[in-house]
Length: 482
Image 1 (cartoon, rainbow, N blue to C red):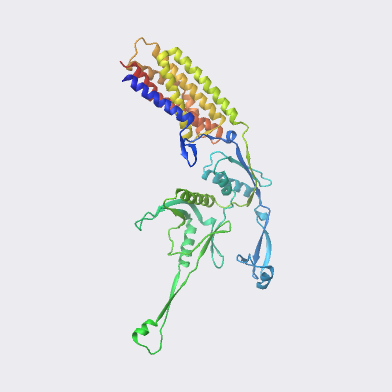
Image 2 (image 1 turned 90 degrees about the vertical axis):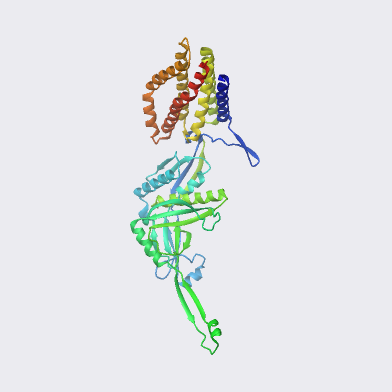
């Protein structure tokens, strides 16, 4: 029974090790794909996308009527047609000279940083040229990088306008909060799926405006009845009564960066100060639903962070390779593995059977540690990799210290194993208390290299404590049992 228990634990360790180092491959379409999450690297190891946002120095053409008001529906008219209507063209800079100030440049940089945070970009760099106003951004290269670039460069101008007169009814100043919500409609008794909403909460002043607008833009019904006055029977008279209902509907248009998002009216006055806009819904197609969610999230981030006071264009967009190649990382990994194997052989030679148990336990912790780093979304920098090496060394010292205490005992049983484990825990963790304090501090530092080291060390120390208490201790007790 004792051998069965030990063999079961060892086989479990072997399985976890294979998963950690080789992965689990499943068929995806016509290929085999590893379903185990990969490592997340900082820009110094994975390379970075560098984007330069340049202050837009171009002009836009606007059309004005005889009274000097802007006309938005005359883009397709010829010069002759414009002249007939009394319209004139005017070239206007996208950025006025008054807006090109250092204060506005800094405000735009701050908005970009807020957008990066809301888009869950953990590792980024934003630099500002205070003279020219250009902003240089470095973000990690991954599947969503292009989408992120689109969002951070957007001005974020929000307007609700009268669809007919183009009068601006509400703008960015009226927005308090924007987020994404989900809902489902089961009123029909069938599965309608999940609907994605863009939820816009307005300020106190904005709430008053929204109530006034929604009152004004509720469709009004007018009913007109006409009777046939000719000499007919009652039945014919009823049939010849004509009732026509005309609905006068005023609509509003929502624009983001002068692009029309939607046109709508209101079914009833809105007094809650919240506007929920349906982006789309799906009952079975997860990919389509995710597209709606991503679209809503992008709009929410842009609107929630406010309008940038300066309009930018993407001037440069290039990927810069890391100075550290994959080959160099592999060589470093092979060296670490080789040193670990030699150290484990020494453990086996020195402590015999207990050393072999300790070696298997050590491999198990290393494997679980590598998986934990991936699924805890720890960004690995060079300092983080150094943290992995330190954890492997600390765990080796812990096991060596425990086995050394056990070896000194003439008779070994479960009670002795427990006592020696308690002694080892006490001595070991008291010595590394200063390290633990420093590690917790590092976890809250925003600089990626130090944060990476702190997170790696935090999970590693926690794992040393928990894993050895459950696995190593248990293996030695099973081996010591009669």
